[in-house]
Length: 306
Ligand SMILES: NC(=O)c1ccc[n+]([C@@H]2O[C@H](COP(=O)([O-])OP(=O)(O)OC[C@H]3O[C@@H](n4cnc5c(N)ncnc54)[C@H](OP(=O)(O)O)[C@@H]3O)[C@@H](O)[C@H]2O)c1
Image 1 (cartoon, rainbow, N blue to C red):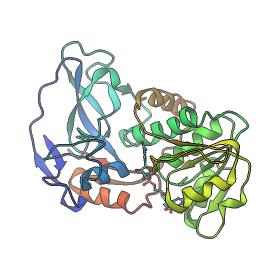
Image 2 (image 1 turned 135 degrees about the vertical axis):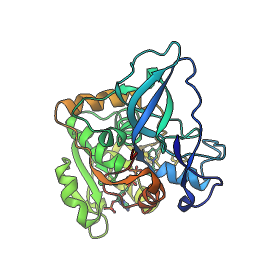
Image 3 (image 1 turned 45 degrees about the vertical axis):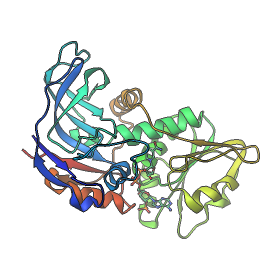
């Protein structure tokens, strides 16, 4: 099979396709013919070797966690899907392997996608939608009528967070650069804030801030929180409570429960999946480069071309 891999940790420019062997499926596993893979900032960090302490990976390493494709065969005791099902799933970061044209996956972790959902759309979901879900509802305990500020609303996690928060009945403000303010409103934001020209600390009484940016954005976010509110960050694992406000690091773990919710939202016509750009597998390095810029609009997706 074809896989876009690195031989050494370092620059994502070194990611190149090569032919490797796919092992036969073990007990409980499915073989999935990958049609599309979503690209996340984590993939860039994995290729750089920056995540070795959290997600140890061996070389050669094929990046990519999020994939969508078709089940082509099943190992023994593999249940929950059948050959021919269109599915979405997530590989563990340390194993990687989604930037390839085939992968193995635990059959029980795969979620069947509706006919109306493209593989590109499905592949955009696992990490970004799952993290947004976990940040808002596990860490943030978000409820109807609450006030939320989503930083990075034009990005992968932020775009889904806006939609999930609106669906649950929250009032939502979100930040992006000037050219993406319209997108924030399309996704449902009640207030769209240009982080370069406008000062988000004019907000107050916010129950939950979702920080996808870190640094000064994170530090200044405490100012807008209501007493008892929560600052949920994706980037600062050392965050601590402050002045009667909660600080919570979100460590994304399991995509499957959130993915089932995503399918329900899609069926209701209430899920927009914004695709920044598509790259063929041979150009996975360029896809990683786009994500590394920090300014993808929605999701970058690698498409297998056969
Ligand atoms: N802890 C975890 O488990 C976990 C899980 C998922 C993601 N993450 C991390 O969370 C971060 C976000 O992930 P993602 O997938 O959403 O990234 P992404 O899709 O690459 O985010 C890109 C977006 O960030 C926006 N942005 C850049 N600088 C900004 C700023 N100063 N203020 C507001 N928005 C800004 C950009 O908007 P403009 O182009 O308009 O500037 C762009 O749309 C990454 O660092 C990722 O590694 C952590």
